[in-house]
Length: 377
Image 1 (spheres, rainbow, N blue to C red):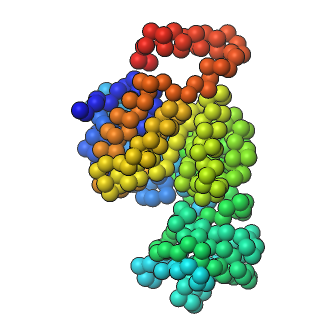
Image 2: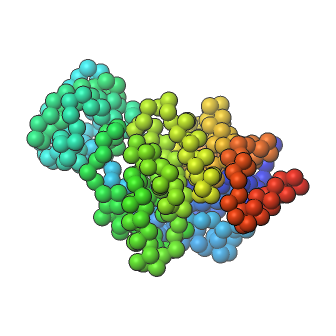
Image 3: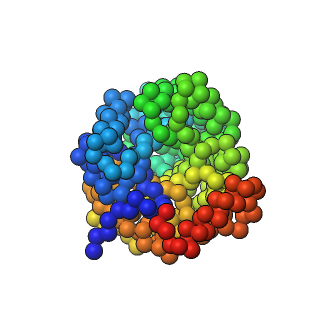
């Protein structure tokens, strides 16, 4: 039996809008299925593409939808990527040598590619790991010269063009807000988006830099700091204090830290946000299999349920709604799971916290009264 999306659902659903869902009809369908926030991924598409999405959302908010859809702009951040290939892909095999070049056009060997970060030959040393395509391909550095990095393939695979590179444990010499990010942020402020998610936040200074840009342009967007590497984890409490909310960006975070640490970090970040009264979003791979399949795996259902049980404020869909075959089904599934888990109650990190002032005491008392009366609020 299909359940109706509830306006009283505490856990909000964020959907990334992409080629599969950019028109007004699809955005309305996502909203009616349970979407609360539309995410614009600035790693893809130009300003005209994203502006058309914003126009569609605002028109629906004004004339059609019962509950308005908020807009979140997600910056690309200082990404390290491979260059464009002359072929469809390269096959990297275990044990082979593969070379990363920092000068375009120097890819003389068949098993080599350009990388857009020139300091990679300075930041790394022999024995350091290099991961490509969100950890699908893993290598280790064997030799370094002034313009290239020679690596041994540990986990092979097919390498396509413009794939993301992670350097676990390395502080890259790139600004958190790149020139492209700055233009995208100004675009978002001009379009009056509700939230700006800042990628690869490393310290409170990064959050303050975005605050300054927003203030200088008389904007009102709230800041979501994305926790995606080891430095951000170390500075997590300060970042939570400075931002309006935090995103547990599990894609890059799961590559930057040992994978078995990811569930522990997710819980720690959610708890810290709850104690500080800040929003927290759990993102990446929640219903990944539904990009191509009409139903989720049992593990995905449990993953979504766990995020709701831990009382994340929002759960986010990425490729599932941006480019997947079943975007509306994904939202319907997420809504059903969230509603069901919320009826059982979840972890309450705040209940044992001692109120610090009269406002906190009143808020706590109101929440306890609503719970005792089983109010859907």
